[in-house]
Length: 447
Image (cartoon, rainbow, N blue to C red; front, side, top):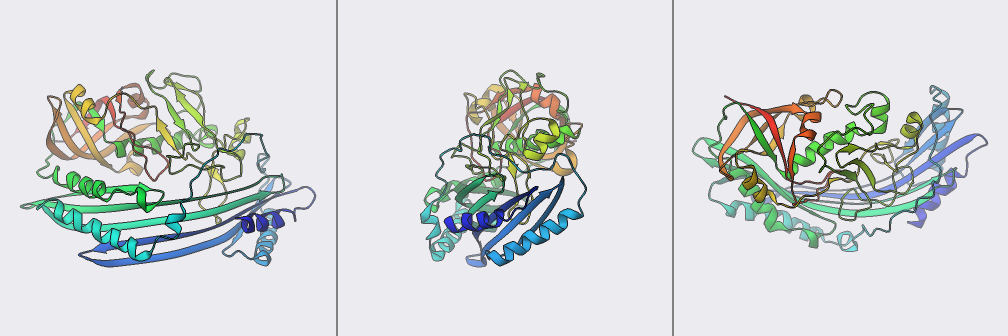
């Protein structure tokens, strides 16, 4: 990646007196293949490359980007960013990151075998995945989609404040969605497998997961309304952690848009609850050596022993809150400026897997999936009300399937009513890991 860093450096060096310049250079490649009814329905291979330039002068920020790796075009973006800054509102907190002395983690997130993996082999994986799901159970009526997806990215950041960094990573995954039927009843289930290279993918696990999740909900009906212990499936927990990540953004907290505003140091969860964001863990698919401003990534403890210990900050949010960056700047590529976000949220795992937790709970509700998160969860008040489906738990075992119910509580109450955290950690492609999580005193509304 020397050419990417060289381009970023040459543009950043054009900063004038009293001006800060940040140059973000990136390139990547993505492949998406979908199998349907024994044939390839969709195959897309796309490459992208570009330069984003941010200029800060006299408290005013300007930004511009170009979709090519050309120095003349990048310098034009610099001129446009300067011009845009003249129209911006003065913000005393605006400014670029300064080197803070934190050493970046040593991570190997690049797999050359993915770079050279033949398209024909990618196609074969998608077709084989569909075939295995169809053969997995006679009740499978349709495979809605069987997908192979991959991506690789390289980036470089150089600033007039002395930051110069590069990074690269690869990733791929299989995803399949299946429909099972029994008479007039149909249910949907999905499965997937993720890795940094094709050799990491487990096609059998993805197929079995989709078949099991679809077939075990056949015959599902509404349950009676009751207070239950909800056992969240690993992927549901990952969704919950994703909600928590927005409430732990230092910028949202500083602006009073988080349920955790003003609660630093309080006991917000049970004593066994520890939540960290650790992008230095190579198992996390959000792992990175540096954040989107070029600062070293680091492990940030957010809730420790149930006590609220910290928030996530980029440089701007840190200045807004009167503190420093936690190396938590994120961005959606060269077309955007940095924001604040988690990369690898995870709970400290417990000692038991999902089956053992179900046995301990005895009576409850295994939540396999939820819907309506965006409309049913308020990160300021903490109100939580979402649609759910899954299986009842009776006598410590899975019982009848349930659908079209609503589970409700508040995030604050849920953190205080956790009764078990699983040992079954599942690394997912998003910013949060999955783990079985049991929470009591959840209101389930059905019939």
